[in-house]
Image (cartoon, rainbow, N blue to C red):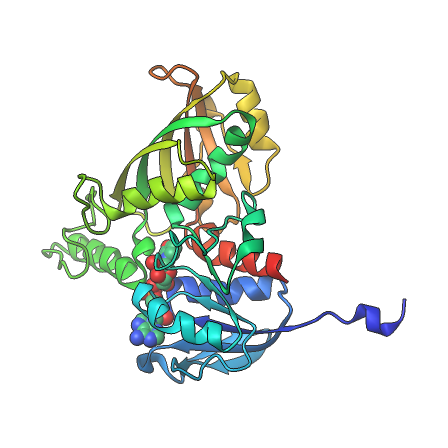
Length: 339
Ligand SMILES: NC(=O)c1ccc[n+]([C@@H]2O[C@H](COP(=O)([O-])OP(=O)(O)OC[C@H]3O[C@@H](n4cnc5c(N)ncnc54)[C@H](OP(=O)(O)O)[C@@H]3O)[C@@H](O)[C@H]2O)c1
């Protein structure tokens, strides 16, 4: 083998929203997974300009995002919210780079692939410069359901989510931390970010409400599931709840499949699939929990049982780190598939 064959192409990467909880995790995942980075540009608002991060032993200063930020960039990982994505995506694409967008701005656009690499990598081949990362709760849920759906089509899904505060970014984390401190110190907790106190509480509404009585977060689960599974018939009813957990979303899911699948087969399907782990021995107190899922790449699946309501029904529980697999890791995996 000559030396030319050993040369790996390296890419110029930008992270938009590099100082956020997802952006910082993208940075560490690019390093962990030894992504072939040539130049790395960290972008955020003017507020964070000059903030320093270490990447592969090198100090990189955060720059304020502007219209010329994308010159010479091959892949831009966007993670600064929908309005920034809507403003800068076209500019970035015109500069010749491919965008992997974490916001909900483009997910349901027909010409934008919505991709979970373990599930529908084939969708990537149709991209026109923008690829969308699905909603974090949808990713965690579908990671558990995809092997079952590939075995026997899922007809209906009923899901209740238990979503960590870090799903709402840095402000969500701070809100829970400060409120917990206030309560411990006998003070009235200050409510700044969520609509209600989140410490010692649950909030059964995430994002704005739709006319049909479902929240936008719940409709993301329904619509994005149809797009990722490429199945307009599948019916999804979700209830999304914010819980006082720092990291990792959990979802209680009940499904009905076309054909009956014995529970042992479901366990085998989960055991043999990429990106998920079977953690299921409830008699020994072994089941997925956010404290186990936090910091892990795999989503954890357990409490698998035959459902008592649906014919051909299965109920299960899944916990997954929504900052990693629900956002940063999924985006980096998409970038890996692209190169
Ligand atoms: N957190 C999750 O679990 C999760 C999961 C899936 C998807 N997402 C999506 O990922 C995106 C980021 O979420 P996050 O949780 O990381 O939020 P976050 O912690 O609040 O971080 C937001 C990031 O956006 C940057 N930003 C805000 N306004 C900006 C502006 N005008 N110009 C340039 N940069 C700006 C912030 O920079 P400054 O530091 O300068 O303010 C920061 O880097 C959102 O679209 C969110 O919906 C999040």
